[in-house]
Image (cartoon, rainbow, N blue to C red; front, top):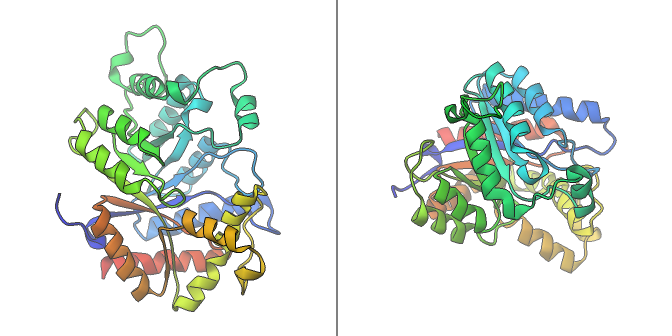
Length: 335
């Protein structure tokens, strides 16, 4: 494996389409379009949206609708799911939906797949109704989805139209080693959710690379790692902006799932020492600071992991600060 650096890998963005405290949902969704247009102009490689349900904090439940909205409003950037939670959906429906997007916006659509529900179990039951699919059916569902998007389904009694023959590229997402093994067996690119679940990152990457079997989509392993990044003019400013993301993660731990909050001066007035430790563990792969600080730490991460691509999550209440962070990050890569 050749040595990787920030300059010779792809740089992408993960947007959870957060609700914002005091902001209408429509304006919050429009903000995601504004961000997509901004990073499109900055030549980021791709933008992914994740599927979540029944939370006041995120507005990406109708994931495919959001993807179509962002594709329509941008020109070049690849846009896709990071991911569609496949156990919530029939593979045929996913193939039809993503195949329709690929037909409308050729060579710009990605289909990242996860096996978690993206919500609580009660909501998962409401989503699936009588379907008995579970995470254990995930490998079969992935292969069925591949079949519907391929040319091989032309003589099938059931076909995805549009969708058939579009070969929308699939990516498997994971936060443990299960999907690493499956991605390797199916010869698919692999994205690890290290932006919120850092524990098994290196184990998963090792397993994926060692067990990878080339298939039609790619000939060699391709790895993506999620990271949290905020770049500002100074370390102090970046750390202040980052308190919005810290509050967001705290709401996950407390199971309150509130909209993204404005930054605060002192997190110690909000969380307990135990909660602080939990949040810091969740956000272990966070790179917050001035351009000099972030570049040094990100370069070390890229060299240590050897990933082919970083997908960056940036929680900022202020969209202008968020846009500036992505500008500064892109300059870091190009410098």
